[in-house]
Length: 361
Image (cartoon, rainbow, N blue to C red; front, side, top):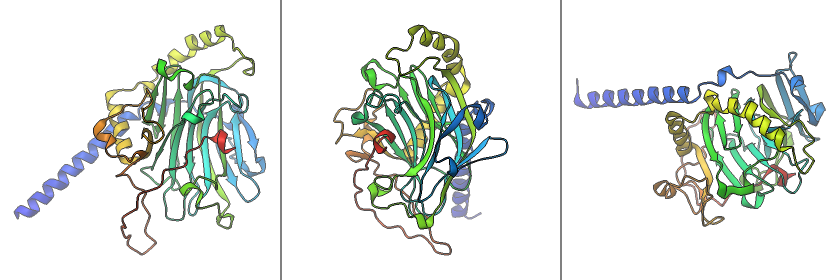
């Protein structure tokens, strides 16, 4: 065998071994979610707005919400929760979706307007052939001026098939997951103080017009001639400690919170998906290295000193501009049908506009 061919075969074999090991790591990192019980819409949700733009399957386990030129749509959990695990499989609108925002998030902004808490998955539409972007936000006690945002690409086409997105929120830890793989971990620390979300929150699911900021800082608006735009939600999960009193009261019973923690949070945190193993952290780091477009942890323009929960790596920090955007992870453009893509060098990108859903409202 020719030496060059032998080297090529050896390299191909090494790549295949690496791919197989990566797949095993991802599968192991995602263990446990297949056993989480899902619910029908009527078991835990009610319409929030745009009910005419909402369609439920016969069994109530799949819900479609649509944005058209008249309104968006959304639904909300029937209860507020002290803590819990919240999940859904989501399929996003395809083709030209510039300005469209799909959101899956926890919030109490309808109750605590100035001191609200919020945990978000935001999906930001894009121009035809351009990728959707995903953003996670963490806000506590109205701390939107100290926003903890991150933005990513997704390692798949979210318009082709549904993928599962999940939020774990406990009294000591927040984890965001994509297809069961943790992508962001926010441990609670005394230095965070009230910035850590601590008041009961409801789960919101919405689609709406974010033309002012969602795509290239508002450069591209929603084009309703390319609509309507429909997102599909299934595998709905609401698992947590329900708030049993009126959360509008200034003091939610300490006994209630203690009972909730004792009865349910220990069970929640003992679940396999909530246990952050070394293998899961490896999968999380791999995702972040390959997919993360922006992180507040390296945005020294906004925050010269990183937040206490940031795991700052000095070598990794060199891979980000001073405004927090990655130097190496760049959005891709799909080629037109029948054409090959051409790579063009990108100029320095402008800092992204990062807002909470409360601010957007």
